[in-house]
Length: 307
Image (tube, rainbow, N blue to C red; front, side, top):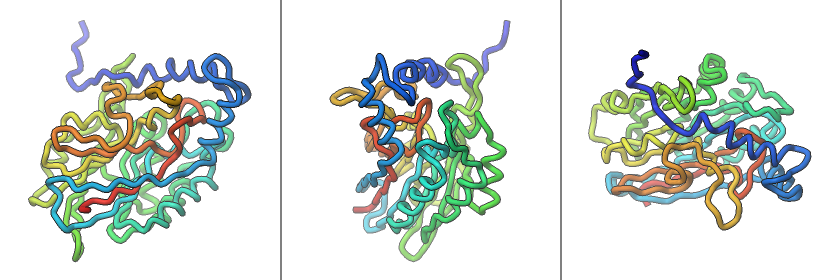
């Protein structure tokens, strides 16, 4: 009998293809049948390719120092690749992020598209060169996502290294300036290795990562998947995550059709507060499964702490 892997996780990610296969069957690039009408599918394709919004969050967690104002720009789930995230579109995302003038920029993984409708392949050196243009006084930091691990983690790490973009993998950095003093912690991916149907082994180490923090200064945690939030201690002032795409396709007046989380829609999107702990989940920018977005436009997130 095979010994169970104590590090394995169960979750819905392996059902992604099946559920999104339903979307694909009814929402191809040419026509939409079953799930959507043709006009709705065309609108969803246009929203994925053309919309770009800035979503603002302003919050003052109880364990964030009074008077320490910090702005953070969040880029999540770029999924670079046409038809909706060609290199020109990636350039627009970077320009929009820089225009916000935030103190800090964080990039939350899933850098390239893996769906079967790709019309323009954007290579790791190409998207990394665009991300290298991101600017912030307190720095630009990145983490990895599940698609990076599943489809080309070495190429992703090399691309980020070659442009000098720091990658946090279960590591921390202390950020200090005349007006700011805090820790930025970055987790590695929670479902990095697929073991079988709905079974994964992660590369994340939350206790080990937080153990690297050596002062009482506040902590901001970066995690690709939001599911880790159930284990995040009150010591962390804010968790920032992506991965869900906000559901990617949300029909009016209803919940998202599919959220790749073991907790369903609980961590699908937005500002989540549980037991006085705060998390922001970005709806992201690119697409997974199909190059469509409906009701969840691509977004760059700006978080303002200490207001």
